Length: 636
Image 1 (cartoon, rainbow, N blue to C red):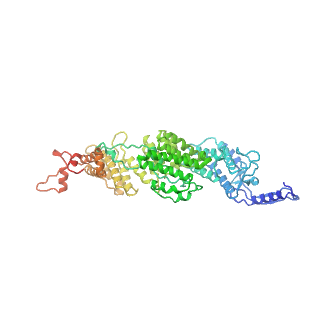
Image 2: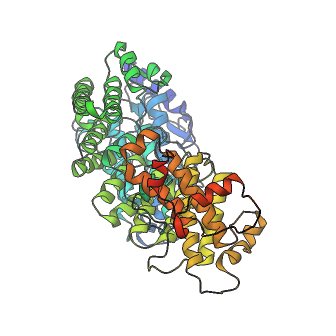
């Protein structure tokens, strides 16, 4: 009611009516008009003509959740709660950003579930940002005549969702529930600056949590959706598992098949391989940062020095100094100190919000990693995860920290939350694979790696790791089965023909590793067995179907493996052979000792020169040629 003689009051009432009639959002009840009842005087309140909301309030939904009534009776209930939150936040984003208004009186009663969506009703409380009015869930800073802000609206949204979560009798397994609680905890933080800055920002995190909840419940990958806060993961973080065996594997000599070892990457390697935060659109160098595509960290450090001072410039310089420390070990200490100075500069540039800026904690975690302070890094990454629980990057970092410390259960949960959500992230797949291998579950490791899709930049590394796992001999020391050898041989063929491994040196190292497995298979068979294991391998259906060449006999296999060892020897530059003679000797001796024993007897026939050289490679009485013979004759 207003005084008809008060012109300002009448004007305000008209503006309020126009404001409410002008609201146009699918999740906000539509106000069509105002009208007066029969016989109403000029100073009496009009009634509102609005659309009919045919549904039930969230208070009724809360009761259904508590009673485990369908469809709120199973673990999908958390997904429903997150979906309600996203619809509410979409409406708040419209009010805050497009209309400059706050909803004000958000509650379980004022949100109606209508069909496939919701309606915010009781819009009479909608008012300009900063205006006081009724509030069901007042934030700590809202008291007396204090006006309601965006932060206050987000506090109310978090409180409404917390009421729904509190009614759930039992939480589902997995990290999804924890992630949801962290979103709500940040939304209802005591200090406004600790909450989400906007409804849109909160919505991004809640959407990520919804995807995590769904993928963990179904055990399948969610539909791809790129992160808005992190750039694509640059490194597979495979810990050498996704690469061909290094030459050093053959340092001990001999053609005995070696067991696979799968260690996590070093903390310093992970620090430079984790996802990189995207620059903030509010930063003064946003344009320059998006235009930059410079690969040389020293060059980019020089070029960006002329940019205006900003938090993102300092954070970029922090990362560049860490890259330079990696590339120039002799300057590592100075470069790491420079990185720490840049982080301090970024903190100063952020100002009073530095304590709640997750970007600073992320980079602090990176600095701890390069100094091997994994526990301190874990603390920083956990703070990041509290701030942005819908993102995969902090979970990937936390998974590594737990894996490095031997906390396998926690690492599997974190890696699994990332991997189930996006199979293309090689870091999570490799983390799970390493842990499964360490716990004697190679098939689970293969399953994780096989799921890395063809469009992932980590696909070739994942398929390389699969070949290495398949080529691993049985843990009990027994001979491999023909079926296992077939899997490995087919996987290697596909890797080099269809899966992107074009590096000939890497191909030879993998081939030598796998041929050693075949040699173990051939020499472990009972004498006179028919068909022999290599013959059985040749007859396998997929070997035949794909026309994959397989050495049919042990002699042919030995010839091929010996030639492969020689190519491995040739991979060593001459200068490197002098610095590492033990490795050079082992590779060349492997080649000589592996070749099959054979002679040629033919009177009146002069052997070809290549055959003479081959026979000369053997000593008197059929002895084998050695690395020293080659070096003496100048062949090294």
